[in-house]
Length: 114
Length: 113
Image (cartoon, rainbow over all chains, first blue to last red; front, side):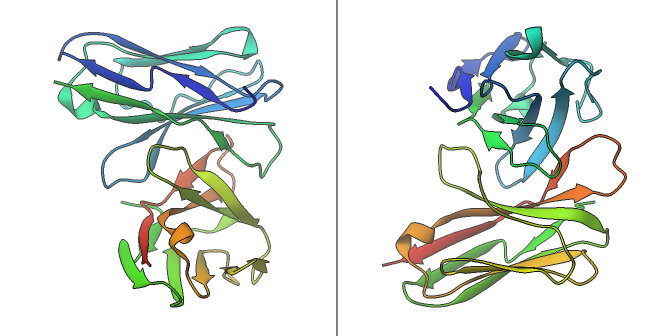
């Protein structure tokens, strides 16, 4: 497809388990973002990748959260030892990289931690 | 502290009515974007405003960027049920060093047929 693809679309896990969320950005987009959207909240910035530069990790809420982007394309967001407060929709977006630029969002991965 | 405050948080109106939603901040932004998000989907860009005082029109939607680039408004004329959704404003912070958008919590609009 031509859009940003995220998987899984829904994930239910038990407290304490690790989860991986995947994002496949639009081909050719150099910038990739992860945001978190909790009920009643706006989008909370998590991490930003731009080309081969070091990622901006300033939004990651704790050291249980990490993300990588392999080959400048696919990205994986990993949450270790999940907690109930991690329940949210995790949105990935990509951008051609110009500033200001349009962010193209995926449909999100809804994470529920029981 | 929320950097971008959106109001109202919820709005329910009848089809054909006009409405305005607001996005306010004490900070200056180099640009501001408006997105619309429908349930189960990601936000989709409506418009980007860059210049203080700028007004952009998109069919029945009118966007304005404040002169001081701290606030913005979205006015919808003759609302339609298809306008229903979550409207998010997002600001690019001057001198942020890294390009990241700060989002407001959004205005959830329901247009009743």
